[in-house]
Length: 69
Image (cartoon, rainbow, N blue to C red):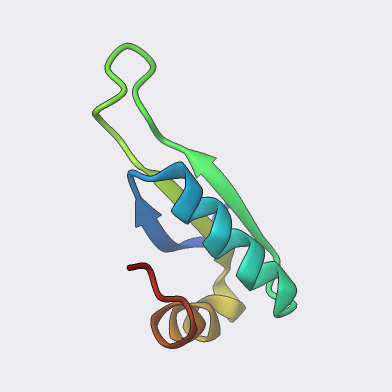
């Protein structure tokens, strides 16, 4: 697990899913980690994890190619 790094965090599941899907479409292995508190859904985030070697490319892709209005 230490080779996996957080590329993106959000409280919105739909945004996290979109980011993961875009990364995978660009050949960057990614997974969505649910860090929400089960008792209090307002606490915590969804995190997109990528391998350390893909982190810079993933962050650039997220910043430059994914727009949420």
